[in-house]
Image (tube, one colour):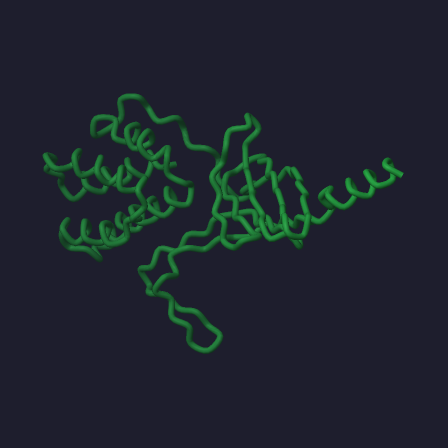
Amino acid sequence: MLTKTLAIFLLMTSPLWGQLTVDTRTAIQVSGLDDAEKIGEAIFVASDTTVVKLPVMLVTATTEAANITFEVSDKERNPISFNQITEDTIVLSQKGKLWVRIVAIDFEKNLYSTKLIQVEINSPDEPSPPDPIPPNGPFDSLAKRVAKVSSSMTELERKEISLVLSSAVEKMNKYNFRTLEQVRDYVEKNWSDSESSKKLKDLLISDSKDRLLSWQQAKDYYLEIVKGLK
């Protein structure tokens, strides 16, 4: 009788397993639409808006449990940052193979479940990797220094700033800007306000304050920054 009672007690107090399903799907994350205007079913942005498209993976957990946690790591088991957009869904933008651990737990419902899945994010249309940055490049190896400072930035942040600078150079080539002050105002207006982006901005402010650049030199300077962000 004691054995039977103990078995019933353990059954009642043990957490219930198998209460978790995980769905993954690829998507494209779009940024730069903050000032978009919707007219009817169409969306419009200004002609000089920089729109960034980034391949991502959405991971969604479905469970009756009240609490869901996510952990993401690479093949060396180093933690990978991610963006949790809802209680049950995260967005991954880091390329390559990643391992996602999901834990669902609910003490009131006596539920506990965990899953470890592998996902991989690829960019099939991505161009070939650029040549290594030379150690002694223009502007006192500016690209090399930019690459070092920007290593803490996310891929999306680097792409956004690269597009802003490339767009500035293109507008300079077309003489949409007439002065370097106009160019600087455009770049500063569209610069990311994240903490890691501010570190890069501080580097460039310090580096450029004593430089007297011509129109062509300014274009070359911006392109060296873009080279360091790749």
